[in-house]
Length: 404
Image (cartoon, rainbow, N blue to C red; front, side, top):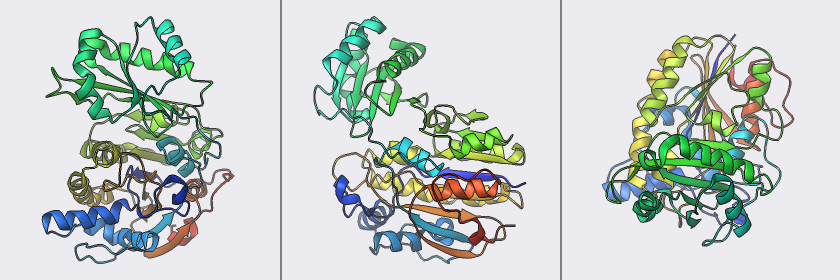
């Protein structure tokens, strides 16, 4: 039986979604605006020959209805579509759960105050249970900015840096050596338990190292503590029928380690791709290798680093032939995203956008899959591929891939 690979290009949006007005994201377009700004700043055309051969340019033009400069390419083998999100939020868990067949149709809780973000009673409870003298931050912040601003005070005081964003999230930054990695994880696990009444999607441990604000840097030991999806995902259905689900990167954390058979951590896009290829060498039949390429979002989207994002896309594009070469004759690769994060957009939050769904197998033709009403079409296709019980949401496009 075939194996499937899903590579999530975290934050790679391709044009504002039909409901973007509800999020203040009309005209956001991560891909098009990167290409435009890259050309303006470097006088060079963005070169993505392998992604373009799969149809990523066509699907962005269809979704965003906005022209942009791109290096010449030849449309080759691959299916392409643009998918809208039906989940209520534009966050990481909602996007991933929906692509696994379980959209989030309820409203997350949020900490909306830009300053003094956390309720006093919550902070008192956290301090009491963790036996902490307090916390630093308590605000909306960029993760890199807040460790630069408060990292030295954190080392001196021993207090964790707690902050949030427009997402449903409680983030905790702490120095790996001075605070301790195990201590940070234990603190976050306690906070996760105390947030049950607030309906917050994730608690994120954000460890960093360095000696001063001049050289503080976050490490690859991030850990996400997510609530469980509201219903069984296609991952649960696959593992329940003796399939094998391999998490690469933060996938296991996003799904609260449910429906996961094996997990591999890696830091950086190249390392994540390397780990995925390594699993292709040994994964058994009826396996799903599920990889999140977090750095597109974390390092470039949120930091509004257009050139960094563009260069990372070009470097990732050049790795695709290696992935193809590692695939068996009946394997199928899917490339998609969980939301947008337009680096030219005001602020540093996610943007509500269509995402691409690209598919490749060795004998595929070029196939336009058109507009998909939900990310869950991917989950339904995975269920169809592995002959699992149908998901409640989504429409399979497996039959359109001429896959045998």
